[in-house]
Image 1 (cartoon, one colour):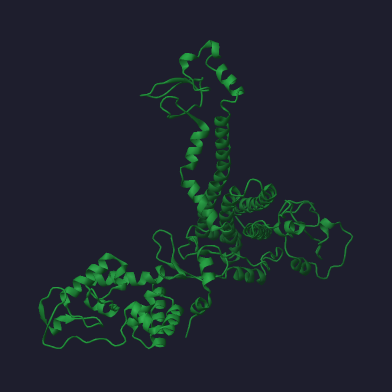
Image 2 (cartoon, rainbow, N blue to C red):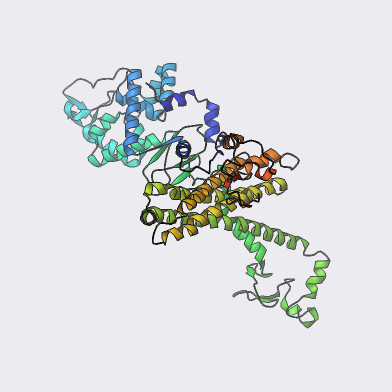
Length: 588
């Protein structure tokens, strides 16, 4: 009788709900086989199983029809369990934010209290008897067929009812909790009565409010924040990462509704976005690159010329840029136009120490912020460009490549997967710069470890991007099939897997707070090897099954029957004659 979501909701404790909705739930990822990628047989069925495993979602995207269907199912479920009308069931669900389990718990704990709170009577009261009745609003006398009432029996004329309902609907979603117009009455007005008395336009508005309430009042469902998108996302609480992708192709964080930002937590993203839009950096720039006029205090920037400064009208005060003294007290005796003896003497005496220190700190802070922001913005631009290239590849180039290489488009999926990986990695890399900006200054070991992991991932991404962007063009511009196209397929698929491996391990390291850095500032050997993107021992064992021990050095101990050697760093199978790994460029 209950859906999986409702059973899950009923079993959730209050503390878990509070932690989840405050954004404090740990985003633990599965450390199992996420790093076990095979680069040799990329066309095997195992790769399809891997893609299928990675595509499992902890959310469901809903359109308007899906939302309406879920509403109706919940209403019928409550109506059946509690033996009440659909009208009463809808009133209960709206009051308890569309939580079936909450309605059941409260109802069976104290039915009388719930009825009193939501305005449901056990037995409806009939209208007073008589051929004519007086309206309680306009006090006009009407025949009984012109009088209507809610379950409480208070009589009002149809005209007054229509005006009351129309005003409530035009006032907003509050019409969903409408009560009897009698001031002392708290009985709820059912949906059926509102629909029967409202005009066509008001009925449309009411239905829209009713539909939207299922998403906006439901703690497990949210609208997609993309402009013009009408999809909603139903999220499974405790299902792992908060990143979701709507059917409109927009990816966002379900917890904070900002764009998808794994592996950075919502608090860091909020601080970073606020910093990018706040005036604080403008003030830092002003403090670092300007000085106030000694007379009017207006900030002045000096980017060239001598030390003789004239403030703008109406002030027009002339002063020395170095010591901020009046220019009338300066001349050849103070060092001329390009120096100031007074400033040098005062500086030696420490007069300008605090001011210079404050300006230097602001300058350093600004340079540090600019360093991270420029790289954050550059990766955002690169991601947008990659999205455009992906769309062009899907709409135009794949068909052209299929004709030139005489291969069906179904055999060219590895190219689309490579571009999808590039887009995702650009997004992750962008947010790692926000993460790096907020690493505390004293934690030098953690910062070095972060920059190392980030650099390795970025290097892998650049190799993949170059291969997908530059090398692919060679096969698009040829007149006929290329003999080495299958080698290109293996290389691009391998780079895609290696890059995915790098970034998955980078994400895990950042989500764990770079815990591989110990309290003394060192980095454990196992932590480094786990974060480098190397495959698990299971993958290595299965690859070397049936091969005996060799007398090779440790850098080439993984050799298969075909004579290829497996890189210890990224596990790519290289040709026997190669001395440098074709994937990660590490020496044998």
